[in-house]
Amino acid sequence: MSKVTERVLELALPVAEKCGCEIWDVEYVREAGAWYLRVYIDKPGGVSIDDCETFSRAFDPVLDEADPIPSSYIFEVSSAGAERVLKRPGDFERFTGEQVEVRHYQPVLGAKSHVGELVGRDSDGTVTIVSGGETLSFPSAQVAQVRLRLTI
Image (tube, rainbow, N blue to C red; front, side):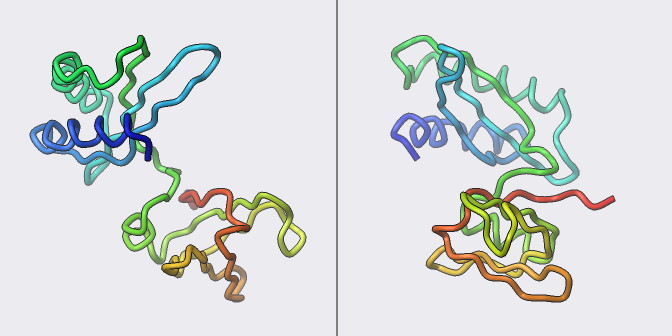
């Protein structure tokens, strides 16, 4: 995490707790010539637009007072989403047994992605899934992204 996102996360955690949610992720990215600060929130049962609005209204004055970003930016609050990206070790622990899609930088075993049940992620970053009854392990160097996958 960058210093900006670490500082914003530090500021956001107590606000999220008061709003009955948790911080899933913080991004500070440049897109189409503008800087965006995005805070992704989550809570049991899912996040509604009202939850995003409540958190945004509570956190906006905290951001203004702390002023962690000296230049202009666009502030957004969003749900982590049903098909959220797993990043931290705790994310992988929390969603063990769920369906995930592992996306690769280059084709691995003939494909750019694999879908299966998450077994876990080792301390070295190796992601293991069960797909079609076969256990597949992908070293971190092969893994571009791991995302929850909705099953219908």
